[in-house]
Length: 107
Image (cartoon, rainbow, N blue to C red; front, top):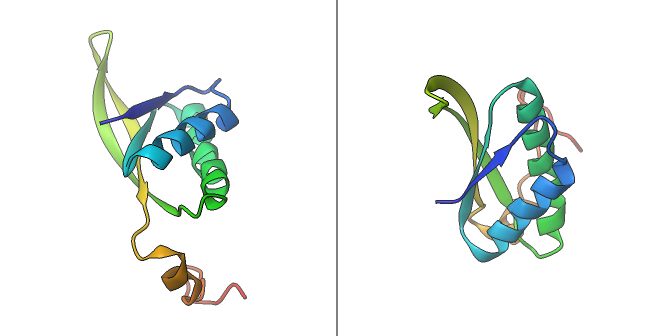
């Protein structure tokens, strides 16, 4: 399994390029970040990667989770973003209206 590790000083465009590169070749990738700054960069990178992959007709979804990792003998909680290709294809998704959490339409 591929894990892309993101730090607070990671360039979001570089991480997005790494995500897009893996997703063009494989079905999924995990992005892992520890700390608010790193999580911010990781989430921005996923959003940017969506744009990169859209040009190739690839749609992705992101499933966040918490994982415990050991760094220098200490347990830390990381945010792991599991990114995978969306099933159903663009044709199916285009027919579904986008809605907010309250059910209101974006259009």
